[in-house]
Every structure is written in C-alpha cells, then in structure tokens.
Length: 177
Image (cartoon, rainbow, N blue to C red):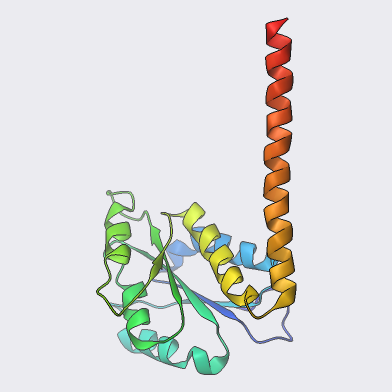
C-alpha cells in the first residue's frame, strides 16, 4: 500500500506479523504521511511465512526503501529476522498483543545480539509514531524537504507546550485570587 504520492517509490516499509496489528501500525503510516514520505505496508510473519519475510527483507534496499519499521507482538522475532538479512535500518515497535501487555515483545525486540541492531521504540501507538519520526529523521539526512518538515514538527511541539503553560498560568492566577 502506498501512501500519499503514488508517483513515487516508497521510501519506508512498514511490516507487521498479523493484520490485527494494523490499527497500531497505521499510526506509523499516518505520521509518515504528515512528513510527505511514501511508504508500503505488508503483513509477513517470521514464523508463519519465513520465506516471504526473507524475500521482503532481502529485496527492500533494491526496491528503494531507506528503512523498515517492524511491528511485532508476542515472541516478536520479526524485527530481528528482518535485521539479520538487510543492511537497512530496522526500527522495531513492540506490540501489546499478549496478556503481558507488550513487555514480552519489548524484551524480544530490544535484546538483539551484537551485530544485528534494531532500534527499539516504545510499546504500541507511541512506538509506532516515534518509529515513523525516526524514519523521517533518517530520510531527512538526505532530503531537505523532509528535514524542513521535521523542523516545523519540532516547532509545533514547542508551541503546544507554550500554549499549555499559558493555560496553566492563567488557571493558577485565577485560583490565587
């Protein structure tokens, strides 16, 4: 699935182990769209479709991808399997799909052996959003338009904090009276 610009090749791959992971991983796609980054999204499993996963990961760079965002729950082997066979940056998003609320996934994604790095984000939605921002930062190193949108994003965050502080100060001044 391509995002907002069907004339361009995807720069980021978003993969997940099951379609039930889509609601969380869609947040990564929405965030990439805010930065004008075209992405593709696929379901592939380290355990149920290892051949498909291997083919996806080994062909990613040749298809023009700059990095891969991987959402996985439970044993969460998908990110490590992908990182083992590509030289692209892999960004892991642990998903809360088991009774352990994602702690099992977090530990699986973060505990990669030396030589097989996976940048590990927070569990679930915040992780998916941050994965997309990290992907944008990687792409922004060589794309001035994305770098500019990242700067604007940081400015919007700072503006939001200033507005919240102003509201807080106004509430405090009313309660002192």
